[in-house]
Length: 294
Image 1: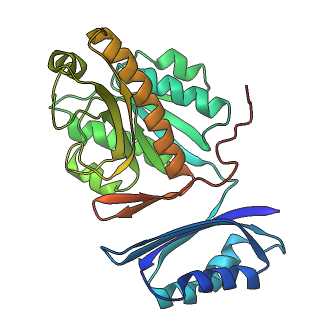
Image 2: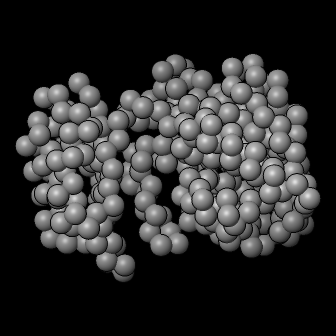
């Protein structure tokens, strides 16, 4: 039995839920999970529906037959096959905690993605990537060669037919052109102190200021550096008795968890752009299970 999901974003209107449910029922589909949000401030409506095709309806047929309904409501919409893993390119520099965490989660089936390439501006993680049977590309970036380097990066992304780029502590600023070309398809991770403690050694700056919370933010990348729509955040408490090195270690852990959760939400088509914010609907039952438990 095929499992699919439908994502819908449109101006709010009466009858959207009824139209979607009625269509799926008519096509022999059973809804197993549904989430929706009506933003009263913007007038936008968002919906994600998981369903099983019990009478053999495929995505091509569903797409063709749903189109008139979608046009009637002015929807941005898509059907997704939940068996198809999203293709991801990971970019990393010299901090490997997020990369290693993602490699493990993908290996045990906890993230429904396929890592099709890893790109770095350094050679530090070549062996660990190759040992996971993933292509590794070292693309050096300087002020002088940035356009050529980004062209090489995009060649890898497009050659691998990647759906998403993940900046797993990639310490290079992407150009406005690349951000616009991949709008809504680049996810970044950083500490949550911003706009405070910019620049080098933010955790040492935070220690010197006596902060009591350390956090991480994962967001879509836009031309406005570190100000794209936020997908996921979390914090961990710290005390005066901990050292700057403790802050860094705790920060690594929360960064890894927050980035993984953001990718999980995106890969399950649970994230909707809503202006400069996001709507992240709840996870379907069973979506956090992995192939290798324990």
